[in-house]
Length: 121
Image 1: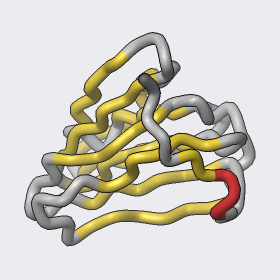
Image 2: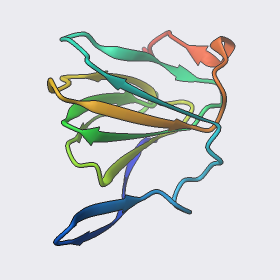
Image 3: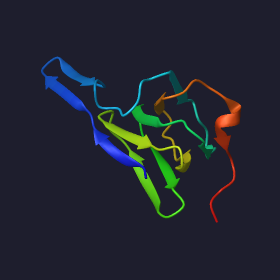
């Protein structure tokens, strides 16, 4: 089941520094980011084995999640919020603000065969 982690953030007069260290339940094997999104939805899948951590480092977006038992919507609007998605979490990203940058850290390198596109009933 997907859940939010509040990332450690240090703030002073110079600005903010957010750290992603020793909080993810996996070794990072892939990093990608999504930006310049129009009104389209992204994602629309789950995985056989990949765990993902999503952070909207600029702007905001929403992520719908269905783990087969529970449906949830997460609003990512702070770069200190990290959404963890388990392999069985069918998810889609949408409602991107014009300036949104969604960074995703993944436990596996890209493998098309790891993707499951079918929605849960």
